[in-house]
Length: 509
Image (cartoon, rainbow, N blue to C red):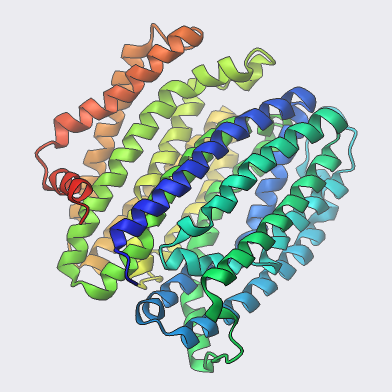
């Protein structure tokens, strides 16, 4: 690969960031129309079924992450026969995943009446709606989604971002037109399904043009031994993915059953904002993930740890900035955006606190996880997520009965902080970098305290501006953005990580 790691990372960040920024803006536009036309009940249904299908998508079991790891070396060596063999195997795996989603999804249909909890009936066939969600989720696995792993592993995601950007506009425009003209949820879902098919088809054709050798007739086959090793790695990734899903994809189901599906609709607006910010941050992190695999393949452990500390601090700074802004601005924004339609759309600040702390845990542990996967240490911490996810469900039910919505999200934070993040950092430190895990843990929670300090300062300073209208919201945005930057500069300006990161950005090593 002639392009430098940094150049490809910057191109990927720029194009993906533009696309995700547009997605965020246009999603708000289409969501506003959706709420005004169909209301909170349909919004809750939308969030609930999306969560159910994300659980079924667990059948993917992290195959993509494992394949990306196996692609690093043949991409560096330009071993086209090996790449074709891996992609053919990947395609077959994804076809099995798609089939499983359809079969397992349909088997859940008889239980929908226990999951959906509406105060009043809505004029739509729930089973047809759910089946359309199944088709939408499964279709990508049957088409060309598997090819995107090759682009990502080669750090050339920017080559297909024009397609993603174009369909961001098309999706938003189609949503608005169909909602305003037909005012029908079924027609809305059918249009989204068709657009997914078209986008995947165009993306697949584009990737074939960029990597024509993957369509070669001569195909090397993976040996039985290689397949066994691959699925042993998958077992470790799968346990990790199952736990993550139990954390992040069960809340809506618990909320629907315990509090009502309409509450899923109220929460889904916050989830929309946080998840979009998570995706943007994730794009930045993933743009370096393939580079991490390259670093691990070429550098010694000491150099890997040095680069890890620099990247980890960069992600931490981004995480503190986003967490502070989300905590301070979410309710003010939601009140301006849709609070006038129904005041119930604005959740309590305590709910927001636990949502953003969960976001912080997810964000600041991603680089650590990228080094874990990039080094092939899939078994490290594999059971932690699973145990934490199970505990999260139990705690969510217990605390949800006592404290309602706050209790459900507090349970997620407790599970992540105590059961997954803390021991995970210790294990990765020891087994990936060969350093004291407690050294990494000490630094992580020192950073965590600085983040809490940012939240406290921001909240105190912004009390006069909080939820006071558009003019005050602008001031609140400026203050909330400035506080984490100032605090990080004051506490970390002399650290080697901050100096090295600034140097890396300007010199572009």
